[in-house]
Length: 168
Length: 312
Image 1 (tube, chains in turn yellow, green):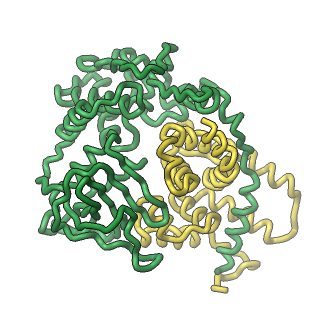
Image 2 (spheres, chains in turn brown, green):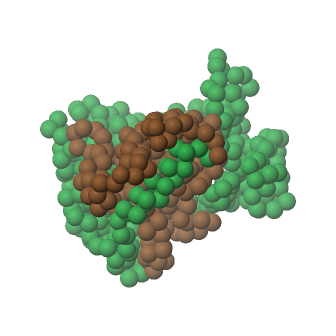
Image 3 (cartoon, helix red, strand yellow):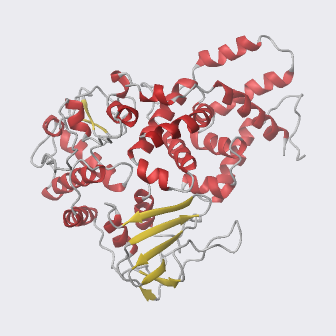
């Protein structure tokens, strides 16, 4: 029990950040983290015996996100509009196009299919390589690359401020 | 890195700051029953049970019965065979809930008005057996009496899960019988070729030749005696042990013994398995286990699913 308590204290914040990026809002993120930690607790003896318990629970969390019960009758997990507008209010009107583009990208990210979004978060936030993402999703590396490619294509900003993507 | 990728990194870093504060004490607080009635007893136990891990039979927990089993005495699993609809959940001590309560994975209705029971913690999670039993239960609830084999299957799944959670006493013979019942219903009819592989020098996971590489599948030329434990090595994820007393152990051995067909089916799907290796420790030595394949050279789907379920 003490072990688990310490584990939650140590990993809770990073799991919450990941859950927030996956789900798009802090309320669902909290539910996801709680649900994942609950599963970890159920198999705690096994979880703490693995080489990287946090990676193991992270895997639970991602899968939990991918299979999260749909909300309400719409059948979709909705993004909390208040969370977005609160962020906008904090910033206020910002003439910098980068901020506008960043917000637009965040909104586009939330509209991606769950798996694409999860793959992009794992790649560009967690910096996981293709083969680790594939292992986590029980998928193939070519499928992961396909998700990344399609996801980026959707996210690509089409404004004059960011004309075309080119490798740097 | 493209500009889109660069901006995406920035966006993710920025929005990660919106994460809610998670602290252990708050996690330990009983969650609101309206949303978390199924899980609150378990989470609360995590921090407040002062060393007593009361893995409870969730149905009984919901009914308010004292189900802690500190003396390790056996708790009988209600027999649901012959029951239909609401009687099933009632027999298991579950609380009726309106349709699709949040946080419940295995919800099955017993009436057309949407009311039903959450079977999380009662049926095995996320494996073929659990899902099959879940759907069977749904059909049962809708007035279709299950076949005798179906009812046996559901009863076996429930008892196996109770054994896995420790709410009833572990019994190796009983577990084997339950697994056999599940396998019989699921129709594990492939020819069994036995556990095969090649000898290893030590129990460590064999190392691939490069970081990105994978350990080659061993040739199935040596018969492996019954192992005392298995270790699944997943590159980048570590090693997952499946000990002999794991409820899934017998089932894993069975699916690993399935023979691989020599002929390819009409067509093969274009995908690559994430390579894993499996090390068996036996009284006679250590072996790298051959994982059965389908006719296309992919891992046998049943073997793969069972392995991943076992390490979940």
